[in-house]
Amino acid sequence: GTHIWHVDKQLLPAQDQPPEKPYVGIMHMIQNAFQGHTTSFLDMQLAYENLTHARRAWWLAQKMWHLDPFDPWNGSRDTCRRALHPLVHHHPFTKKMCLHLGPSRERSILQGMEKESQEMQEASWSDLVDEAVSAGEVYHHVWENGDVVLWDNCQLLHRSNPYDKSEYVR
Image (cartoon, rainbow, N blue to C red; front, side, top):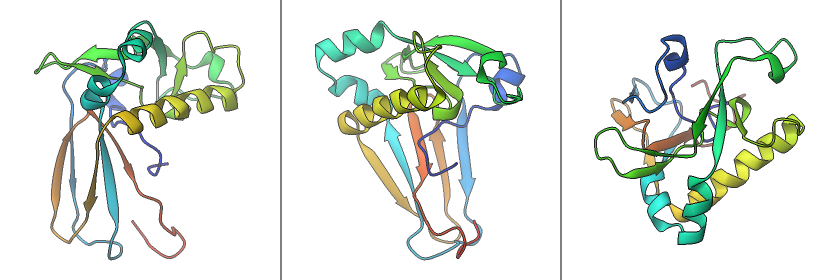
């Protein structure tokens, strides 16, 4: 769901484009679902910069499978189309190093964990996100009617902060 940290690059695999391709997200809040609704943005470039040298080396040595969001799982992630990408990439414009965790916990598998359960794979991804959140900087945007927010999917993870979906329509 949107309350989990993710990037919006779902169309890139369908267009046969690499995840490093520049990709900007835009959201326009026509009518806010409720007062205080927020979206959080995590700076993955700053997260990389703030890691210790040992942790940077570890991240640089890792790769992650990105599962195609348009390929149906049919009950097994093993048969889903995928591509292997490094966990650290150069931003296409700034050339600075950024952490890159893949689209979401459901669509990302750390290399070497392919035989683990989906629960273990997702827990590993969540642990990496927690490390990035601890090292990075998070901006919380409080939405108001008419707001327009643009963000760089090559550098930022984002999420809608949890709310009662039975009470509010988003």
